Image (cartoon, rainbow, N blue to C red):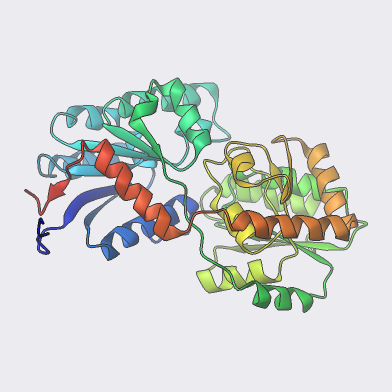
Length: 370
């Protein structure tokens, strides 16, 4: 029987832009995977690149090139797609000596608000970068399908969905019973054009005869122009007292919002997975969202109503039914609780990520740098 040497641990380098503690779905995924691997004895070296990706300036590109060049030969490098897709020359230059594994949350060219030239630039950039990767880990089947357009063969792709954490629903239900301000709607998303806040406000503007309040939790710093437009839209519709922009919140404060909400709403134009939607299901919240990207794979019809992205009229009709039909709302809540039981937990996600690395990195990862 072989004896495992406890002094030797699996070793990967995790490359990502910005702060690992940033409050975004993609960064949360990265953080949970890194923490999970480390708890299992893996050595994970974090290499943080400058913020600004996928549009790095010359200084950020040069700094990234230097950080990558300093990595030891043979390293297995898991590169977050937000950076990897924007540095094809660096990826190609080091493909002969590094074992690149790209982690794609969603293709860069599917971001909302890009003009045709920007979309083509990001598509070409990411396609050339992915050609240098031994494999690609994606967070949904939807994103795996999307990579076919990037000439990534299916055998080079592994799907590792994000995990969720169990919720004490009795506590959540008690908190909701204390809610006395009408139907409390929750939207958790950074304010960027892709998240569709403008569509949501326009839809709710036609429902001011109903008793509701919208709480938006998410960064107000990532796209100042989108935030300015959203505030102006709220004021123009006279919704200043009914829409609250909370900005980013810590975990405990965010959980309190999930606990007191009656429903979850997200008008996103694309989601590579939609971790906030999975969190809403875990809290037993009925969902109104869109069919964009992986959302339909995450939210079943029994748990929510999905409309095409950018369909403001359809979104308004779905919201009206949600507000007007408490029995339907309760039925969707029950469906959300049932759907939550099928969602992977984080330990499962970490196991699948480790298995994907074993395959995509040719079954042997760097051990203690050797």
